[in-house]
Each structure stands twice: as C-alpha cells, then as structure tokens.
Length: 460
Ligand SMILES: Nc1ncnc2c1ncn2[C@@H]1O[C@H](COP(=O)(O)OP(=O)(O)OP(=O)(O)O)[C@@H](O)[C@H]1O
Ligand SMILES: [Mg+2]
Image (tube, rainbow, N blue to C red; front, side, top):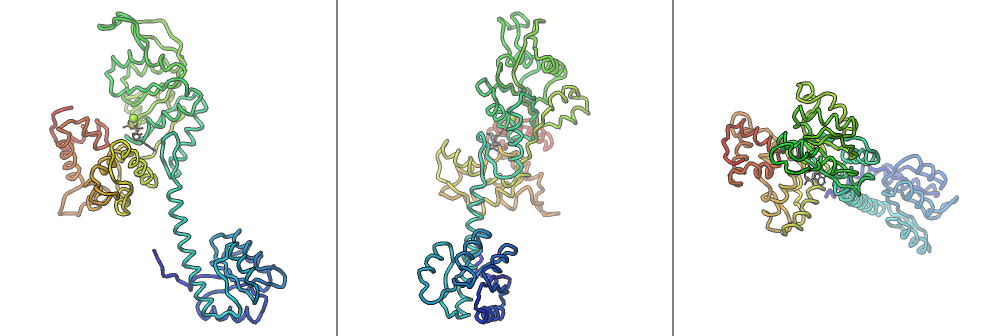
C-alpha cells in the first residue's frame, strides 16, 4: 500500500470565524504547501461544501453563526470520505467527544500549533487512503452477482441477464449466440426458469450430436413401422416439452431437409411424426443456440434464410469471456468453491499473481475452459493458496496466449498450442472427446486443430 501521501495536492476547507487565527492557519498551511480555502462563517462553509470537494475540513467547534457539528454533518453527508478535524476551545471536551462520535477524524485543542495540525492532517490523509482502498476491495468482492446460478460481475453479463429477464416473460422464440463454453445452455435454462413455463419441463437436444435421420424422429417422434426398428409409436421431444421449453442446441448443425421441417413446425405450431401425415398441435417454447455465425451460413447457402429470421426474433449474444475480464475472478472463485465441494482439496484462494495470470489469459474455451482449469488447479495446489506453479503451462505469463512469442527465436504460439494439444491427448489416452473437454474447446474445434497441425490421433 502506498503510504507516502502527497500533501501538496490536497485542498482543505478551513472554517474559522476568528479571523486572525483563520488567517494565520491559512498562511502556515500555505507555507507547508497545502491549499486552504478559508470560510469565515458557518453559512459560507456550508455553501462551499455544497459547491466544491475537499480532502479535509478543519472547523472550529464554536462559530458565530452556527455550530461546527453542523459543518461536520453537512460534510459527511456531502462527501463521506472527506476527513473532518475539529478545533476545540477550553472546556468543550464533551462536544469534542460528540464530534468524534459523529465521525470527526480528530480534534485539536486551542491554541492550534501549525505543526500539530500538519501532523494530524497527514494522518487523516493516510486514513482516507486506507478507507478508500478497503472500500474498493470490498466493492470488488461485493460486485459479484448470481442469477439462476449464473455468476457475473460486469455490465456485459448484466445486460445479457436483463434481456433474459425481459424475454422470459414472453413466449418469443430466442436465439442464443456465443462462442463455445460461454454459457449458452445456462442462459437457455435461466429463460425457462424465469418464465411462466418453469413448472413444465426443459427439454434440451443437441442437434449437432445426433445423425440427421435419428434427429428427426427424436424431435418429432415416429409411428410404428415408419423405419426399421420403429416397433412402436413414439412421442418426440417437441411434444414432450409440452407446456415447457424445448432447447435446440447447435441449431447451426441441422441438415437442410430438417431445417424445412423445423420452419414448418415453428410457423404452424404443429408437427408430424415420422411416417405419419397427421399434424399434432404443439405448444412448447423454442429456444435455440449456436456458436456458429448463422448469418454467414445463410450467405453460404448452408442455412435457410427464412428459418434464420424465424429463429432470431429475439437474439441474445453472450460475449466471450476475454471481453468481460471482470467476470473471470468471480467465476474462478465460484468454480474453486464448487470443485472443492465436489472433490475436496485445500485451496481456498488465489495468490495475487495467480489471479492476475487467470485474468490475463485469453480463455479460448471461455467459461467451460475456466471451470476445467480450476479443477486442475485445485488438484495441483498443495496449500490453501493457489500459486503460479499450480497454473497450467499455458497460463504462465511467459506462455500466455496474449503475449507474442519473441520473433525469430523461440516457439511460436502455434507450436505451443500444438505441443499443449499433444500433451493433453497423451494424458487422455488419445481420447479426443475427453481431450476436447479438458482443453475446454468443442470437439469440432479440436478436430480442426488436429488437422491443421497434422496430428494423427486414434480414438474419437
Ligand atoms: N456465468 C456463469 N456462471 C457460472 N457458470 C457458468 C457461467 N457460464 C458458463 N458456466 C458454466 O460453464 C460451463 C459451460 O457452459 P454452457 O454449457 O452453458 O456453455 P455453452 O455456451 O452451451 O457451450 P457449448 O457451445 O460448448 O455448448 C457449464 O458448466 C456452465 O455451468
Ligand atoms: Mg452448449
């Protein structure tokens, strides 16, 4: 903490109706580099307090037209951080005590010795800085909110959650956009939980993980005999979501033929089971999500424009974690607590260095990557405090993706990423699904990177 207070930049308000004492103190303070504004009456002092800010107020307790205690109160009300010093005459100890109780920093008995006043002022300024520091720290901690299990601190997620709150009150179709791991599914659930449909079910289906043919029957159901293995009639998820919410995740992955059927279902509010022409009314609320640039897919002819417009009635864009760095530490603490509950472990806090490194890291896998990193860190940490050594190599400052590798010599970012992927794959026994999870990236992303780096890896 900075203890050297620069006294020459401070401005104080001196309230003294004894003109010679006031004049003398102003002069003495000025000689010591402090700018004092001299108010000669209580009225003048109150007016100055209303119009200007001061680092400290030095006021006589007894003023011709008023009371120093009123000045103290007015000052505390206008600017609580401004320290107030009282000048007390003989026999006014009781009032001095009252002043201290009302928040005065200290009091000086008359006759006031300028050097003493300087000393007390210095102390007051140190105190003020300390209080400011504590307040700032407290705010950092307090500035952490949780909404349906969604932890955030900054204005970006707050804005997202305001949208969630608003749209939850309606039945509008929502399109959630955001990079992998930003919390799209969490937001979809929050919309459901905040809506009047919360007593209905929340049914999620990952359109990217299920083969096209199967996806259709999963969504719309099928009738007996409609395909090999369809040995009975089956309701689809759309029907099952009933009065609840149907969450279509990775909507950008749906094949063209299914896109037509989705559009029809959305427009008409009815579906047809596979193998059946009979329409069935459906009433579930539809929330979709994608980490793809759907507009681009539309341009490239991969996604139907009419469906795109039908889905994006109410788009919610979740910013990547790197664009809301103020959320990183609150999330890290949240995950540290969560991981400790799940698997035990000693670490309860982050060293300032480790915290700074987490905050500086780019988090390509967003919140999911952070969650996994914290689990790993908890395993690594031997003591109550997480230190730099417990952090994964890519978060060590020298390797942090944000920093460029030295030109010419050394390893490039790509080399580091490749080495890291190889290391994780090795650790996961070449299991790509597991490796993608640990890296905090989507399977597709990992697969693309493997291809780029020419890494041949066995198991899917
Ligand atoms: N703001 C947050 N507060 C607490 N946990 C979060 C937050 N955002 C994300 N998470 C957690 O991070 C993980 C990833 O979130 P989620 O699955 O919702 O992301 P996603 O955007 O759907 O990812 P993907 O595109 O890979 O499917 C989950 O475990 C989720 O609970
Ligand atoms: Mg998801």
